[in-house]
Length: 148
Figure (spheres, rainbow, N blue to C red):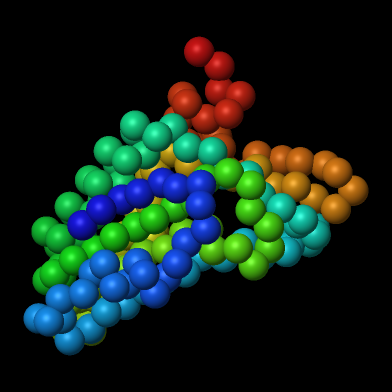
């Protein structure tokens, strides 16, 4: 099980191969992609930033919790950082289990907890040149613009 931050494009097929286990009867994945709109505004691009040491620690904690809560054989979560455009894959979660129920439940748990707890910040770039950091107020003292 691993949590990874990367500034390179994601290859979902390769990531799923990394979870291969002959004991698994179910492999579930989630792909979070950059969309071209947000709350009525056209989005041209996103920038993702992360506080790496804390993000990796918290991400690994989430994966360990998933393993304790659900009967899974393996799990991984990879989140992009850097500049992304609509259609790019921003986050991938994969889970393998002997049965589909735990795989689905663990996959949802991992993405929900990652979005809620891991210090990764998103800056949206809108048509016309405006930019805005999204949902940074709840992400702690390392958020962009949060001060010392």
